[in-house]
Length: 157
Length: 387
Image 1: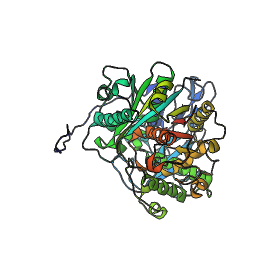
Image 2: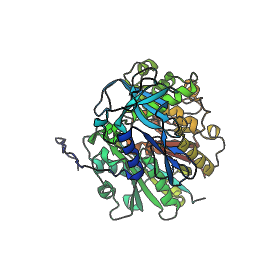
Image 3: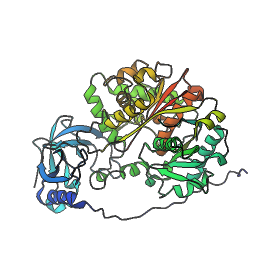
Image 4: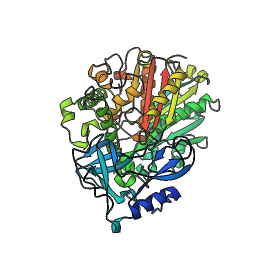
């Protein structure tokens, strides 16, 4: 059977669901230290000694358990960057800005974050975190507003 | 080694930005029935169905396997759904291979689909990130691959330049003119790519794939059935899958270990020692232009840093010595959940001699590659015209 061309219709809708993501003890400790002390804690693996941030209670390299925290950074090295020229819905900061992968001093892994659109933000450059003022912090990775070229970081306020 | 298994029929829908006339189960059915017809079979010949699609958030329906299997003619019957991010289409084909190679089933239909127009693709992609770490940055796919591409360009400058990415975009859009299923069928120039609006630099608009609606399907069968129903089956001679983590220490996006390892696994199974010489064509998952160069290097189809030279020399063109993405690739259509299976289908079609206007002469062995997640999932499938 073939239909006569019908009026094409759509059903509009939305899926609404609120979540509370359990962070787990290790990530919870990280976020608490970030919010309250402006410290960046990495996880040290008891097996291979790799230093991970984001921290995990398990080692992704050797499958051992977490042994301890180690403070890393606050400075880090830009491992890559991508420039965003135009604003878009949900963008973390106003355009133009740069997405960056940062390897914090003392860590073996990289963190995704953002940086100002400054030509000094390039691979191999040293950057440092600019924290939000304490009252604005909520225990999230975005308590670091962004990473700025070395020497300009507001650091912990 | 497992028992011989082949692709004996393929089906695709015309890829478009918005498919208005059919809903999700209907596009999956369209591709599935075409594959069964292409194999010269009847739906009653299918012993099991494997379904693949990317995150539910793209269509806003959870648990799609609930109503897609009945649309495919196997009701009641054995059904499984596979999900591995962007590689899901290929993982679905590989799961179909496992089903038959194991001896559990003789003839399996593998179907992968995506209807991105039902929802918001970039929102959905950003929502794939870990809510504890990355989601608030709304990084999506272009920015992530922007970071990957920058790492690659920086490492190999000046041997690889932004123009080399543009050459991939030009080549694949030109190939797509010969593929009736492709969505973007438009001849462009390197200058067009270089002057197109920035998305996440170094990526510009014409370095990026479109979002598409579409579905793809393959009929996968054991040897006796394959030989009876298909004059030129595409035999699975090697498969490899590998996943890593975005946070794994010293992760290398410009030469991803998961891709290297998936290729090693597939080459070992297929007894391939020099892939650049022993393979005839490749379909790689280049959602963004620079990725074609990155994947070719990680797959061992050229040396590290030689990707630029490979495209510039014309080696990977349709009439070159080693055509890559003769179909036009992901740059010409990206129904995400189906895209990795489309790579397998196009590689299989080249081996079967059924690729139509973009058929490459004398293909005996073809490679299909796919990528997914935050540069963490990789698959490689090798098809050959004999076992």
